[in-house]
Length: 412
Image 1 (cartoon, rainbow, N blue to C red):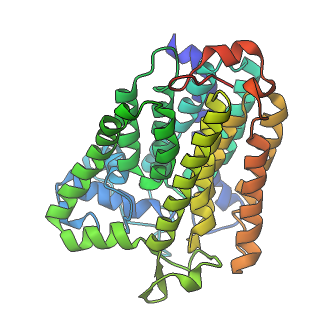
Image 2: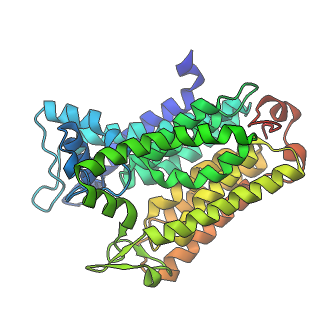
Image 3: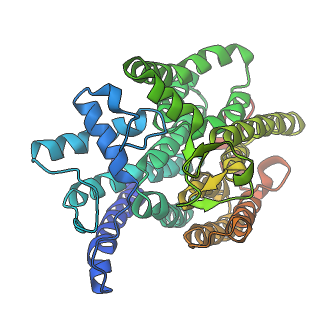
C-alpha cells in the first residue's frame, strides 16, 4: 500500500502542519505577543494566485504580488485560494490593525502540506536506493527540520514543491528502465514553479549519458515555462519581463552580502539579483563539467549525481546579492538525500544541515558576519554528504547494484 510505504513522510507532514500552526498562532500569544507569527511573503503569492484564478493575468507581476518566480508559484496556490474565495474569506495581509489574519488558518496548513512533497520525493529516492528503514526515518526527520524554514517560517512552498518535482525527475532517470521523457516533464514542472532548479540542469544533462536524448529532454523541460511566461507576457509584457529578468532584491529588509555593492541598483535601495544569478548559472555549468569528468574516471552512482546537484543549487547562495534564510534549503535538502547511503555521512550531514538552518534565521545584517558563517556551514554540509571516492564508496554491494542513473550509473 502506498501510504504504508510512505509512512515516514506522511507522519512528518502531519507533525509539521500541526507544529507550524501551533507555533505561528498560539505560540506568539503565549509569549505575550500581540500578533501571529505568520510568514509575510506568502500573501503576495496568494494574491497572484487569486488573480490567476479570476484570469486577471495582467496583474500577476504587478503590486502587491511581488512575484519574481515563474507563474507556477501562483498555480500551486490556486486550489486554496479558490476554497477561500468560495468561503468568502479575505486575503488581506497581516497588519498592525489586522494581527490575526483568518486566511492563515486555511492557507497555512495547505502551503505547509504541499511543501512536504519534497519529503515524499526524498523518501521515494531513498527507497529506490534501498536505504535501510532506520536511515530513512532519520533522513525524514532531518529533512523535515530543514523544511521548517522554507514552509513554516518563510511561506515559500514553491521552493519545496520545485525541489520535490526535481527529485522525482531524478528518480525517473534511475532504475533498470529509465524514463527520460517523464523526467523531462517533471523537471519542466519544477522549473515553472521555481526556476532555481535550472542550476541542477547541467548535472542532470550529463546523467542522460546519450547526447541524442538531450534535445527532447530540454524541450520537455523548457515547454511549461515557455508557455506560462509567454501567456503572462502577452497579458502584461513589461511587468512580466521586468520581474523575471531583473529579480529585484531588498537589502534594507533582507541580508546584504559582499556582492550587494556590485549589483545593479534599481532605486529605493533595491538591487537586481539577476546578474549574480547568471554567474551562479555559469558555475552550475562548471559543476556539470566536473561531474562529467568524474563519470569518466569511475562508475557513477546516484549519490554522486545528487551531490553535484546539491553543489549546483548551493552556488546560488554564494553569488546572491541579497540573501534570505530559506535560500539555503534546496542545497541542504538534496545534500541530505545524497548522504543517506551511510550512517557516517547521514548523521554529520543532518547535524550540519540543522545548524545551518537555524543559524540562517539570525537577524545579523553585516554582509560578512551573516553571509560568511552561513556559506561556511553550507560548505561543511556538502563536505559531510560527499561519498568517498571509488566504486560504491563504502556502501553495501546490494545498494550499489539496485539503482542506476542513466547508462552505467549505480546506486550509492
